[in-house]
Image 1: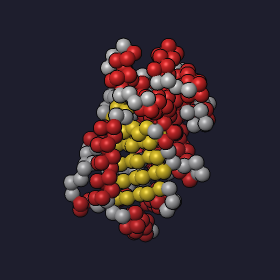
Image 2 (image 1 turned 90 degrees about the vertical axis):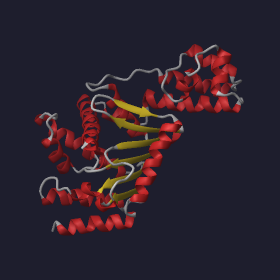
Image 3 (image 1 turned 120 degrees about the horizontal axis):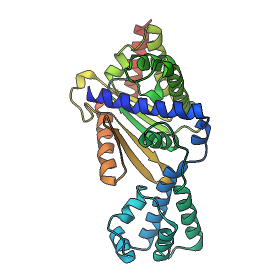
Image 4 (image 1 turned 180 degrees about the vertical axis):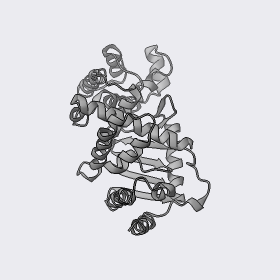
Length: 309
């Protein structure tokens, strides 16, 4: 039950963000080649970490040399903290960076401090959408429903219509935003996508036969793509490492950064420290082991489609 609530909240907030940006005419800007300040902070952190390690300093040693508090370097390198020009100059000087690297760090620091237009949603929803749009690899685990980013418009409309928090006047537009997000995976610029679903997500009928069959056909089309892997965990497998939770793992290749995204009812966490991302990666790996193979998953989906007539 908790996994259902958390998973729905993730999708609802993302839908609100996408819908708000679409109404404001900023959707194209957000999903264009401009990665936004958040991603630039991650790229900047990766650049500075490489410079520090090349100079043979630990994060604590670098902080001590500059008279900074112990965790400041780590927060900068994981994108948790913005970097002033003064601090950027101090770091590149400490690391003995070449002119080219110095110019790049200063430019990234400036971009990372840039403000983006506000949206009528919590900052954490906006942050997730930006990360998802720039991810080179996405891993999803949802136990009892198809993730919003993979939904057809009709399936999404049925789920959104059943919600007690989505205004009826917004259902159609939000369903369309989910369909637009799913279309990305059929494009040439699609990220690698790994999906693990609970069997209930396949068998639970949302909408009538036609709606549910169309959703399964879309899932099958995705699963047949070279850059997409879909697996299902059978109900008969019993307890598994992800029971009762839902989460997303995002990898941003150009920032050399991985992020685990989870939510509670009133807030969200973006976990980028290695010990956190390793834990969620381990859970995802165990879920894949517990799940049917991708070929057997396709067979299960095909059987469900045939049963729907």
